[in-house]
Length: 221
Image 1 (cartoon, rainbow, N blue to C red):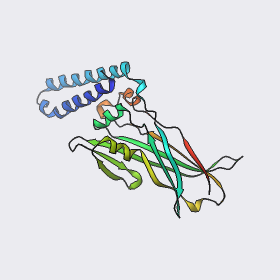
Image 2: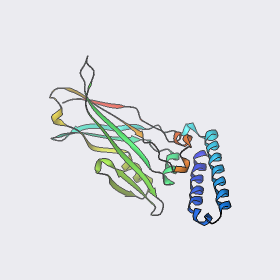
Image 3: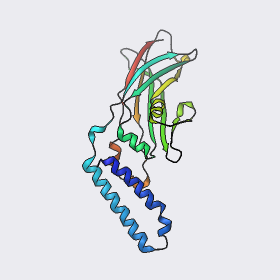
Image 4: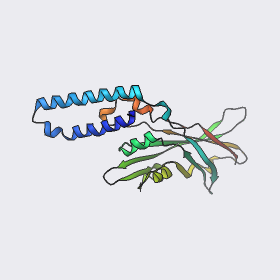
């Protein structure tokens, strides 16, 4: 059985034990037995991940459709992440674990023989979590004042999570006419926040890790 599937089932099993703690509260012996079951299950899950985690299932995410434009007042950037969701990530998201992408954008003045001067730096987040009761995905977009968008399928999740569109990255008053500038951008997966009873399963995180290369666009203002 695939390591991630085992851990997700373990997640469900342990949730069941946690919910039933009240029923065990009248018996010290039953509490002791239940704790032992949980400890053994965690140990088994940990060993399965160590032995059977699949390194070939990592994401090869990259950036596409990169554009830089401007309004009367601001410099804007547009781009899309492709191949950012592996099957393991989809399974984990569908189990209810929140997943966040960090978008890092920097603007530099390119100065030839001198080191490039950083003009602006911006970090925005897109987060998704599945609500199993309502059977909807909740996508939170930080750059839109933490707007939450509800979608019913993973196609919608991918559409909202993977696109940066018209993001303001710097005030044009900070740029000098006829100067050379460069916009650099990359995307990384944020630290996964596992349930407290799985925090020590470090190998679980390696199934998800990704970050793109840095991409850049040059322009003369």
